[in-house]
Image (tube, rainbow, N blue to C red; front, side):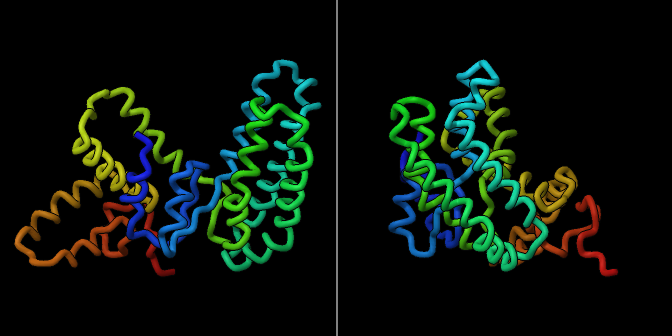
Length: 243
């Protein structure tokens, strides 16, 4: 379900920035969680206008719409930010303030100017409302060079689980869902750290039983997907090679 207590439980010890969609539970959680900042996802804002465009079949007619103009502006924001990808976070934050902030400011001025020209319940009206309501969160990336424009990387990682869940139709308990989440968290984090998933999981299943009698869990630090102490057979490439 979409109850607020789920993200609250999951993020209770987290401090940092979460890039999310416009789900109100995240915003409520930010208000009562010190150290937690919620950043908005520009892909979700863009998607609202794309939905409005899909309803129009004629290509020429699409180009004369407010939704089309909005997509062009968001596209310009994305293009400029993509050009900053190779910079350090500090450099990116500086350039975002100089070059991207004026585009973002202009976009929100434009949205508020034209919002009254469309029906609130139309697709474009909903898209305008989403941007206006999420403005505070959509601006967060301008203040931090490490915050991405969207959470597409996360959604791509979760897609395999969602497709699998649909096909299996076997996870029908909370414990089963929690176990699946743990397994997917391990494997997807292994992928993100350029590990061979099969070899990595095999290594975990070999090493962890050796520590059954340990009174602490310090040994787990060396088994984490980003640990430099993992054996070479677990790696796709040697990130730690000294040249």
